[in-house]
Each structure stands twice: as structure tokens, then as C-alpha cells.
Length: 633
Image (cartoon, rainbow, N blue to C red; front, side):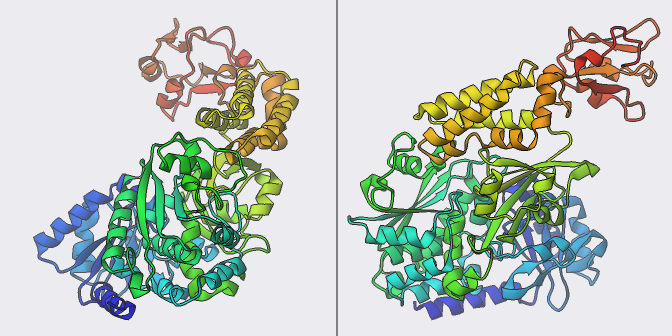
């Protein structure tokens, strides 16, 4: 078939479902939706529709980015509103079917808002103010099209850029990407067009192309959602890149912990082949290209480009020294292009709208948009796509909704485990490659973790250093030994054994690790410690000089105490919950904690009835009185 025939067929399929005569029910069943209970909701709709003999089409879609509101259900009713419902359970499905599917009651008391299409067909919910701060390119179809139906992608403009590219000179495509200013979204931010150009000009055949979907950062899930919700845009981008550089074989390296993304990728690749968009003689152009999926074993270091290539070759994932760079000697020693999931997903859009359109978005040194995973203590956890240059304040407060429970904002950790922790007075920092690097953080793959007053920054630095140290491949002695030394020092500080000289030692070690490591993991590994020392030095001093944890987190520097004036004598909650029997009653029936037995697990505070609120944490532990009936100092 010609591409025009493929398009017509796709539009017919799309219109019959989304603009047909019967209601259409979209249910988000990406990983976040499934974790919240979306599959039972799908089952409930199918059963209720059958029971009532009601006519409606049920479609499983991806994630719109509102992960904290899952399960999400969108009902498209011909001639009426398109309404989105959040936190849907099987119990309210009959109400929605009777109220809106069979009658004219949209059940607005259960609704999140109405769904509309904005500029460029981007789907959004106008009642949510967060959409005013977003600029959705990669997320434009997510949560609205069926990721398992290629016709939905094609009907919304998909693969038209590929058809256009196949009529262009390959070198012209490379020039267009260079002019756009697109930089790699995997973390390093290397100019994409320049990478393609270097590989195209490199000597040697065959050449390879790789999509890095090994997303291992704690709190990051952008690539997973894109692949689960709209995988065809990534595949189309890879095909265009392969044609531009002169490549016949490609690989998608994806972590095995993403089973749903792998499943939907397999379906997407098969459907693209069946339509002649992938494989031999694509769209009768004479160009042939195929993609193979390779599953990773979960090592964080495998996300580093050279380590990833070793993994595909069946070798141990360990970074190698460069030069030579991968564009000249990569997979099996041949010229190789490697880009991130999101980088490839931009390619069809750039060819469709032009390099000048893309370069008009963002900042001088960072063009386009960026997709972030909002996690931690934010109200609205999930995904957000914003123009480069948007401030951290907009991400955390305007889109993320601020800190949960009315707690005070303390820090935002951005850039993955080797990113930086930035304080409140840095929230005006623009989100782009250069501004974040200047602040001591990195863009990374796009994870943003918000922390509140209950987070200890020394403990946070220790957590990320522990992760990095365990995930280090061990090849570089500076990274292998240096991160272990930094971790040991941080552990000493959190148990009250630190020295003020340790702060300078941590900084010196961090600089040495940065300068002596082969790969990006080692060169950025000290960031959590360096930024917390830079911005939260007083908190370190409290641990060292006062043996006190201001956030009441570090176990060796806190103690639990029961306030006798608040303790209800007849209540036994704390006594029964203590795993080491450290709590007993004195002669007056008031509970007393034996500090020599207490493991500081916090169970007593968790079970103490809120109307009593008798259990408190104290730091330093010396504040606890020697007698259980005395008030703390």
C-alpha cells in the first residue's frame, strides 16, 4: 500500500471509534494505572455494559501524566461533553454507565474535568491549572490513543514525517536536526545532529543505531510512560535517524523490569512491519531497516552508552575509555548512533514542523521541551512536559501542586541519583542543561524528587551515595574506592561520629572522583554530597557539633519519649506494637520507654491515637529525662 492508502485506512478506523455513534470509554492502563487498580475497572465496565446491554466501546490507553489521580477514565459521548473521571473504582462504574453512557447525566460530582484538544491537537483538561504551565509535545497522544493500535498514531499524523523523510536527501535531514538545536535527552545533552553527522561520516560498515531505554534512576519513569503510551513515535524517530545516517539495523535496549513497555513495543514493531513501515523496502523506497529488542538485566551502569553496547554484545556492562567515541567505534567496533527514548520521539515532530519551530522553544542553549517525572512529597506526582527554561518553582508548585500535607518545602533533587539537591532559594533556577549544571545539579533523564521539612539532607546524601556505590561497576578506583569513602564518612556523620574536618574531606574526595572517573556515573556521583554540603551546611554542622538531627531522621541521634501528661493510662497501643518489648507501665499506669532496648523503629508513634499524641521524637537523645515521669527539658 502507498502511505496515502495507509493513512486513509487509519483515519477510517480512528473516526469509527472516536467520532462514531456510540460512546467511547478510555481507561488508562499504563503501569501507574494498573498499580492503582485500572484492570478491575476495565473488567467492571465490560461486565456492566454487557449486563445492561449498553452500546459503548472500551479502549485501554496509556498515561496522561496524572499518575496520582489514577485510575483515570475518559468518556467520549457523541454530541456531548468528553469527561475525565479520576480515582475510579469498580464500585462507581455502574453509576457512570447508567448516568452518562445510557442517559444524559455526566456525573460531574465524580468528574475531574472536561477534556479538550488544544493547539496542535494536544489533549488537556482545562479545569486543571497545571496544563497552563505545560507544553506537551511528546505527551500529546499519551492517555488518549490506543498504544496497541498503530492506526490511532497514524490518524494523528504519525509516520507522515517518515514518508516526508524518505523523499529527502539523508544529509538534508541531518542538517535539519542540527539546525533545530536538539540535544540528547538521556542526560549528557550532546547535540543530536552533530552526533548523527559524525557517525554518517565515520568509516566502516555496517553501522548501528541504538535506543537507550534503560531507565534506572530512582524516581524516574518518563521513558517507560512514553513507551507504554505512544511507542510508535519512538520507532518512527529511529527509522528516520537510521535513514539519515545510513543504517540498516537497530536495537532498543530496555530494562527487563519494564514488562508492559516491552509488551507494547513488541506489538508496535510487529504492526509497523505489517504495514511496510519497518523491515524490507520501507514504503517502496528501497530503504530497509529493522529493530530488535534487547532486555537489560537491571544494572544501573548499563545505562551508560559504552556499557550498554557491551551488554548488547553479551559482555559485562562496564564503561570504556574514550576516544574512540561510539560514533566511530561503538557496537562490535562499528560506527554507532545511540540516543535516548525521548530524543528519538522528537524527530518526527521536528521534520513535521521544521527546525525553526523547534528552536523557537526553550532557551538559547537548550531548545524544545523536557519531560519530567514528579515524585517525592509533591501533591501531584506524575509526568509533566514543559518548555526548556521553565523554573523549578513552576514544576514543583504550579504543576506539582506544592508539598503534601501543608509541610514546608526543603529541597528538590533533580537529575537522578547523581543529581543535585537544591534549596528553596534556588527554585527560580531555569530548567535547562546549563543553568542546572551551574547550580551543581544536572538535567539527567528528568527525575524530580521534592523533599519537605521531614527529610534529613545528610541522610538523603547518604541514601544516594549508597545507591551509586552499589551500582558502580568498579572499574575506576576513584569511583569504586572514592564513593565508598564518601559513604563511610556520611554514615559516621549520621550516627554522631563525624568531625568538622569531614566536610572538607568530602569536598576534596568529590572533586577527585569527578576528575578521575571514566563515565558519567562516576563524574557526577559526588553531586548529592557536594550540593547538600553547599546548600545545607548548617544541617551537617548540627549532626557533627550538636549530635543532633534537625529533621529527626537519623536513628542514632534521636530518641522516642512518651509525654506522661498526655498518655492515656488505659491505652495499650504502644505496648502491644513494640517489637522488642521496650515499653512498659510504671506504678501509675503511665507508659515508659526503656531507651536501652528501644530500636527507634517508630511503631509507638505510629499507633498512638491522634487524640493523645503522647509519643514524640527528640534530638539529641540527651533531651530524654532519666525518669519516665519527668517532662523533657
